[in-house]
Image 1 (cartoon, rainbow, N blue to C red):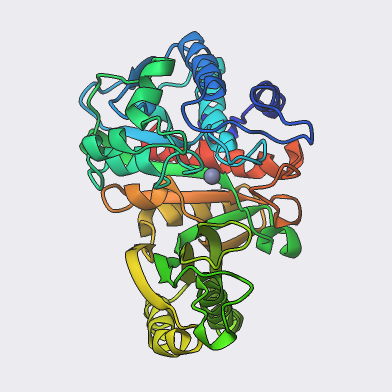
Image 2 (tube, rainbow, N blue to C red):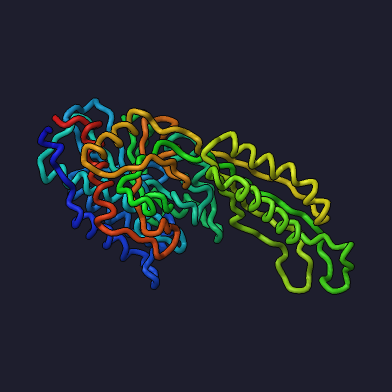
Length: 415
Ligand SMILES: [Zn+2]
């Protein structure tokens, strides 16, 4: 055992930082509403930067507002090990989703300072912009720009529901940075996150070793009917777009149920109805749906199954149904070296572990196309997330934070 393998993070200091973050955008029901690039997000970003600078880090901000705090390594030419997640939340979000991963990275730096540890590689803590997608779509846009998956112009032009663009929102809080950072500057990425599902909590395991990600197929479906008076229009003549959307919703739901024993999930998460008024049959519904499965081939099959049912849905509803936009992500395996390191460190520390796939989207999934990447999950109470009641205790997170620290130390090479 080397001296550094006995170093432990200060969980009560991390907890204090988490609770300070939980004051910024706090909701009456104990959660957080801290949408990307709002005043609240600006405030937590400034607090995070202040903490990082106090810990001796050099902070850089790129054109999409991603914040990178660098702790220097001994070798000025070595690529940095990246750790972090996101500080933005859902509209009715929790206090730990994403935030734990960023502030655990900060705690890692503080701990290394306490113990006077030098690493060969620099270590950088990142806060990705707009991970949640609750204000600007698509989600995970900060990491998408970082990896070149989305262009900066595209990202800056995304508008929220009030027509404010992401670029304007960056300017409003002073976070349109000028630093250029890309995956080539980094050695690897480790993202610590609450599980957001029930597997670890139910099995009473302390650390989730995330080996890869579910495959996701998302889509916008457009259902077009015809307006008419809700009274006199005879039933056979109605082309009610809500009826078409309801049939699509049930088909999507059935597709998830028919594969749920192998891990399949399906969701219709949003309907936009026009004109959405009393007395008139709606003529258009735009709906957002997604399918998820651990097996990429099955995710493809789920989408194909919906497409095959469209003619029948059209015939029964009298509406025109089309898939207007389609996207896919996930389905990758994380880097075997980094994943193996996380598992080995967790077991050496004596923790109970479980290998699992992430079923939610994370910035690490974009990074994994470019960098050796791993994720570590901590249990969360009842698997509840994207909910104000989302909860963990210091005891729940301590094992995962220890594993993050020791994995990063091994990768960054203590000198
Ligand atoms: Zn998250």
